[in-house]
Amino acid sequence: NTSQQRETVTNDHNPKQRERERQRRRRRPPRTVAPIYTMNKFVAILFLSLCLALAIAQDVVVETISEGKGDAVTKEHFYKSMVTLYIENDDKSKTPSGWSTRVEDGAKKDEPFEFRPGTNLIPGWTEGVLTMKEGERAWLHVPASKGYGARPMGTPGGAFYIPGNSNLLFDIEILGKVGGTEL
Image 1 (tube, rainbow, N blue to C red):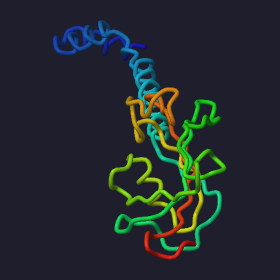
Image 2: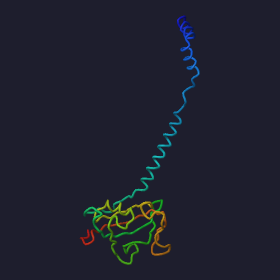
Image 3: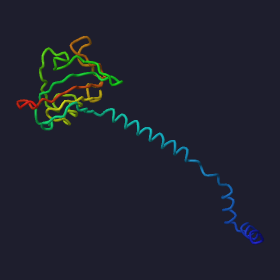
Image 4: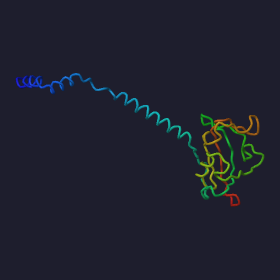
């Protein structure tokens, strides 16, 4: 105890030590940055999760109905296809759009649709068919942002109609290259 008292007395007489001691006593408890940091981290994770969900929602999804046995679809060729277009509702149910190349889905006759990926097509169609092979049949789930966006297509009550901001669902079968053999 005597040595502690001596240190205290000695420290009291040393102006630098005394000032340090005074500042140490005056120090406030450390700021609590942890809750703010935690909250910012939570908000950042929430934001990133939302961005990821939106990015996933903006992806074209190809759901194979039957495998193709032919070559992969490329931008270099024109292709023949049988197609039925639906509007994909939020609950994943489908509403006919009125456009099809198949008699069983309302066309007057079976008449293949010819296309070249990347030419005069919505981005989602090109993105989806480029993952397919000749002979393959698949559902192409196309978000509105890669479809027609906010623009409505067709005429309400007409032959076909797609409201603005509609997610699209194509039942598409790639028959083969134009001028080639159908698979």
